[in-house]
Image (cartoon, rainbow, N blue to C red; front, side, top):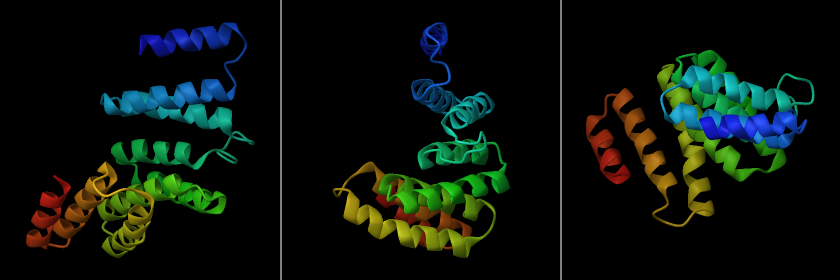
Length: 173
């Protein structure tokens, strides 16, 4: 994290701390902190990136991947209503702009949010939309298929279908 701090210091000294480069730095730094188990710090940094990238200071005009990144962190913090709102905004903006990667990532994230909220039908619908997208976009064996299988396993488990859950877990591995 100190390298990001140094980079931010240089951007600030150069007067570039409100630029797209700074926003990218905040987002990436937030993602690192999320992986390191510091979701509160990650949220703060990703929100800063969104603020920099927005046209109105409230996420308008922000890249959908940033919205989805914030949604994932909020989900980790068990703030599912807010996570759902950002994931759905990410999905809508990604579809409108034709950003297939962001559509796919938001579908996977939305499926998990819906499942965790107990809305298994919406979770299944998101996964049903995601599976053919991944098949069109990615080569067989891509890690995204393991993520899909893992989410399918968790959905099957939530439905009480342990046999299918085990099969999806095996496929994920």
